[in-house]
Image (cartoon, rainbow, N blue to C red; front, side, top):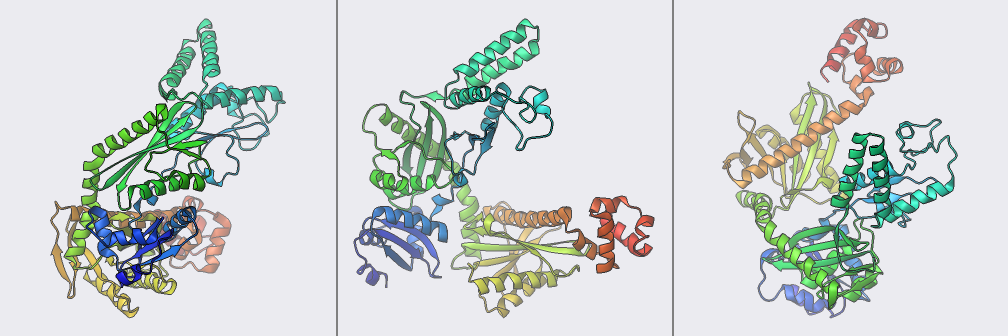
Length: 586
């Protein structure tokens, strides 16, 4: 079927979607010439993740578009929509903090991340290496320049006024020239000109020394050291002070390593690195990576520098900024430096990447082989929790290709408050997989329940009643509450797991993850409380008595502080005693 479809594919720009035997999209790509690119997957030999991808392809679709820019836009949108398992790079959601000087009449300095939601980027400076560096810089500037700190104006000056870090804008009338001068000096510093800041610190330091306030003078000296050591980044020989990012890469052993350098005001402010399996052609991987890079909360600079392997014109059209491929001079040397750093990063981290693959992907493959499954891309695990037979909850965590998929985690509040593990399992499995059928959600390849043979039978019973063909297994624990064996197959049997194997640690990590997720949900409910729901858990308290308690006490802590006699004035003494016992155990 694939060969017949290939003969009909035109050599025009567009996107293609690779599917596995379950009709699930496992990879999305784009091509200038669809026929050539698609044909390349089904001829010759492949290695690494590309070979694994090809082995799973049983069908494909393609969409022809009018231009390469349209194909890039469509590709990114399709990847976000379907989250294919082999489009690994777009799961790199690293974002950096920026410093924002607000446009208010009396501005504030803020550390921000969600910059894509902001309409005005004129007063954003960065990106910064990490949140700590950004906060430290804001702290330094707030100490030197007493801008407003409060979101809203108070009726009287706050602590910042009394420690000379605010001019008391809420009660004092401050000349706008004073504010404008502070803004000018702050902007100069954030753009890389630290002359005024250093001058100000030195003046204050000399004044403190003259007045014999040596501790204060020492603090100011430490500020100077911070600026010279931490904030003076590696200078480059480009003197035009244009904000630009530059990209370099290195390919080896089936992986691509990419380095991004942020150059601001003639200095390398920070760098970002990514390493992931190379599945597509290098040009396609690089172009896709850079296009997506600026979708994750990174402000576009005035210019980006890229190696010659990148599709310069396509990126320039897509990003709507200058994209240059340096051929000589200092800019070319910067690209070579980025390439060299990408090579060093891959060599340094390759062993770690391999070990991580063995702990996740390879352990997942071992589990698939032990259970004789055709594929094991998605696992859903369940755990139940209750408080002394009351207030039952359940949690579900999801692993995709050996790693947690936290966006897919789900919480379940059980409809009855009894210590009945079988009915809890029956309810949560039915609710989950009825919803999967109803909304046509992605189905797991394996379900793991926390419990013994009885719980497995209950879960299998519900799965069969819904006409779903999903295997259900359990994890047996030893007397030390540690995973010791798989409970699988039909009839159910124990499958021993080597406690020194990657598979054992993989199963143990999954078991800890679902247990902690469920327990945290339980604690969350108890602490925030649906107070009325907690009261409903106490025998003898119905709607009328619950409303009387809520009207008088409002919070759990106030009920706890009340003694039995006081509670007995609005509910029976016996019920009051049960309520106190219940709350004391929370």
